[in-house]
Image (tube, rainbow over all chains, first blue to last red; front, top):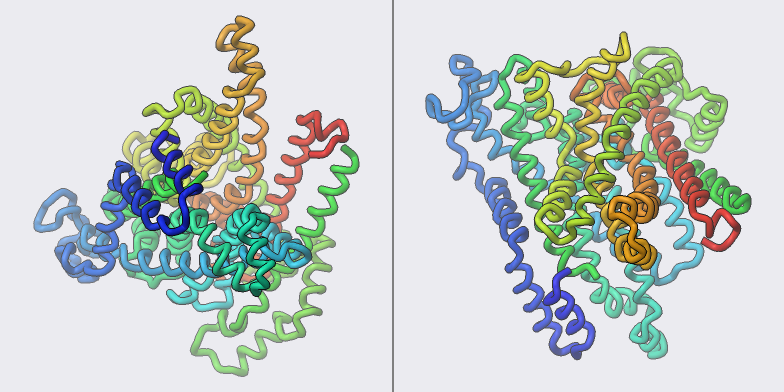
Length: 298
Length: 315
């Protein structure tokens, strides 16, 4: 870690509460100085834009089939920037539209997971004792299973709609996030301000949510950005196995699953283009997460 | 040491029990009917009820759980809905194939991760370090099939060096050829975690007093690295290899599907598609149990390698 950041952190610890806003501003300034953060957020913003208004970026109708012009090679031939797939659909346009599903599901599920994780983590870290022991065991058992496997198990009896996937990933990420928050809460709970609040006779929920929560904000933000990458990873994996999206949807994982067989006849663009789109999104999230972590983590 | 081992064994047994409840709960308690899921939305209610009866999924949950776990303890996980045969006819073969793939992956990723991480530690803060860290982390969250697609395209389609998929059969050389691309795919994802741990371990070891002493007493750089830095930085790395076993076993799901490799991952993926719940439950439970066992083994190995634990002190 470089010096200016350490200084910021030192400042954050010593300044009175009234200037937290100044500290925040300083943090933000540091963030916008980091090259990885800038590059990451630019790519991220591009995909957010595509998810909101794919029609502006896309050049064709994503689901319009045209058997006469199937498997046109890239680049920029016959009005198709990145060629067409086996149904003659425009590969570039489909890659743009493919952002939507993942850009809804991943953030929504991580917001849900973080909410669950924060409540659970605060309770576990603050109360400790039996409750903490029991939940910790369950989390450990849950964590010995990859999220995607538990999701698959659940999807045998649930319908695989968008909301189901969001709830599933959210509930499965919750405990994992709770573990991180719990660790942060444990280091806070013995500090003077918590004791002071206890002596003042504040209720537990007040101490947890008003006193401790703002002080574990850093780990929560880090956990959120990191989990966002995992949510994309999990959702894409599910889509690739054929869950969570409808056949023919331009979703990246689904498209790669459907187009991968033409790879062997050297028709690489219908699967490689969404693969690279997915990779760019994941790398972008990671660059942002890395920058945020570098600033907030102690 | 004996007390430590016993305590860890006890904890693992408890976690395993919770795991069985989790697996059962997720697959059986959630709303939705197995019969309905198999027959589809257009089947009439009577045949759904009849199928549910046939499959034995209409009894009370508690007794169904004890039927399932009781059978599991005797190595009987019930019959596959799809094949109408015991799931244990299928799982061992698939598991063995997957373990071959996992072993191949570890053979590639462990040395690579340790070398990469140690190298990054030696160039801490420089461009090479940043590159290894960010590339590793990015690969770690890039879905397996993205890397897999690129590997297939380059090495199977364009260069035609290796097969694009299939199962590991025949001579050892043939098997290795089939295993290389899927193993490299999994390597890409695991490399980030491993190298990060190896890097952290190496940085700590490099900054330690014993390394400084070793350097100051005039040992050559390579000896210092090998005998003092690496030996100490390997401990956290072992721990992370074990903790990533559950990921590795899950990563098999997507990787085996992409490469059409008949292992446990493809079995799970197919079973999920067919809503073959007993098959899925058994496979997922075995994956979880295996991952837990690996963590246990790693913890014991670490304890044994660490004299403070081995000789009876507190950890």
